[in-house]
Length: 171
View 1 (tube, rainbow, N blue to C red):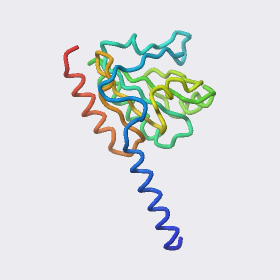
View 2: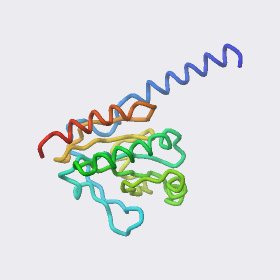
View 3: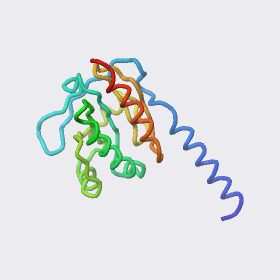
């Protein structure tokens, strides 16, 4: 690799990391979370955000083609298993038009938290999601308290910091 190619690669990486650190565009911290009703994997029953009120909810927008999602999924599952009894719910919201793509991904990246499908991209558009993965953390009263776009190793520590604060709050 020549010096110009290396510089271009480093510049591209820096721009990607800078863009990935910005907040999700369509929602603001402090706003009520927009309700949704989506088909739940393995069931014909819908999952609704309003039905989860009273719990701390981490909505994880993901897609099968997303490399960072593959790294993040096992970590999210560990967090879910550890904090579920304390009132945390994680909802994996797949944004692909074909649930079969998500199913193939989940065979090699299994999780115990609920997975829902947004094949028309309605919820992700309403939330202003532009990159995968994206996280929206919602408090027990249904208010958006934190957002995060992309994933790099170590981000799960900030997820945990935010989750612990919300779990400690009274409803």
